[in-house]
Length: 635
Ligand code: ADP
Image 1: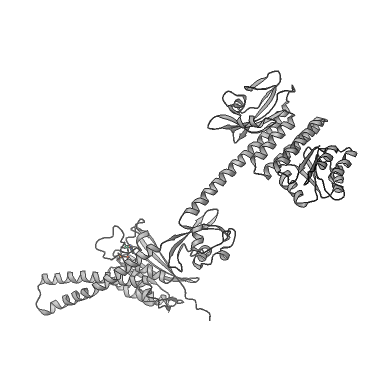
Image 2: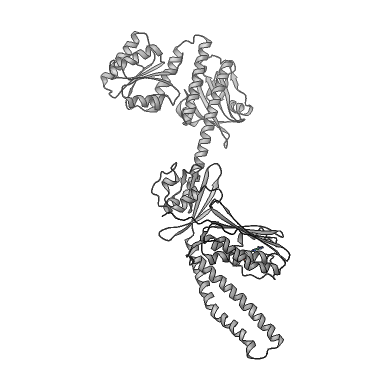
């Protein structure tokens, strides 16, 4: 016989659902429902519930008639009458019909559960346990229902109360308690109790060192005492028989579950210890679940607070391009009002094309890692993509407006100064050239003139580079047309191969006659090729090899310049594209401004391409440039 099956007879679907689904089922009870009195009567006869909750006003048979009908058929399970009206007449009629309890609607969860559990335990006590098999079935059913409660609710108080209640009922004890060890004070506190005074439970604190419960925690062994060895658990708390079992999680014991008898002289059996052990396992799981839940929740809240309060915008998406999180700064940047975007597709939520491309870029060959977002109000954001293992990808957006402004001011300054220097330099070179024509010059004077020319030429190169860079960065070279990169690269290679010859280098150019065009500026693309080839020759000692390759792959053209030269130390590699940067250890004899690669990089990026370097000191260097093929727009 189950002590846990409850029939709910109620015609209002809302109230029925509330009692069944929100109160009884989460507490682990099996629930039968009926929406009128006649059906309830039939179910009561067929399914033999252990308790009935019935509304007073119901179609066919009202609550009191149902109770009378049940009594006349000797069905005397606890009967709780519920009603919205509580007139004296109703209460009197309920009392006369031998109703166990009368509750007024609206019902309160805790009150209803208390009344139900009280009447069920009274009922159990009044029922003779026919034999041990039947008792065992009851135990198993109770354990099963607690297991169910454990998985269906995160309310720790509710689960622990059910565990203690079951402990008392299954061992037929007078009292039950669940004591937890406070790690800091080493005291035991009562976390749940049955048949103890509320005030006693609240104030109960027991030193673990000199208590029986403490001993169970220390030894990890259950304890069973009979009436012939009374134990004083605490001053004024004397029991005749008792069981304590440890609460254990991963070899750590953190509390005890106990039942006792103060008045009754009945001894507990060994099987009671087994039952209590099973219940203790449930309690331990519930406590661990609650602890993990609290921990996870606290971590989640912490992370949320960090993400919300960081100034940078953060967007996280999963591998199917669905939004996992967008923090407030990112919402502000992307002009998103909506708060509830989690789970939606990136393409449904984010309008900004750059961010969309960054997040949804699928071409593994050229996974884009960062982009700049320029807003209507001229603010500039640097958006970078980072993989997040086991989650997906995150985009972090930083406001770089002030850096961009600084950069612009600096470039404008450099351009202006370069311009102003160019005229006097041209004059110096012109007059130096004239010097020899106006009169005889001795050998030393001639040497000095040569040095002036070399220096003035070096400054002119620097200024030309600076002006070029300024122009490219400012985007003045917007004039683009379909051009043959193959032809331009070949021109550059042909122009420079004599220079390699002078150094006794082997110069190899694998450039196909014709390749599809790229969209670009011919002068700049040739400059880019020439700069890379020139560097390769410059940084490769005599007798080395310089190889230029151009090939097509899918929708791209790949241009590489390799040499067997001095190479670039790993530590310098990230900076070689910066303005004026020259790697450490470059011999003084190799002249340069440190601007060539900045120009190359600006040109490549202006053409929608990418450039990178692979290099090993003393072995050689390869620069790779990838440019998109020109695609004719459909009219
Ligand atoms: P520079 O005028 O100094 O050549 P670049 O901007 O062209 O300036 O190159 C920057 C630095 O990168 C060089 O100073 C050199 O240290 C390194 N570098 C560039 N190309 C090569 C190469 N092919 N081999 C070795 N080092 C190189």
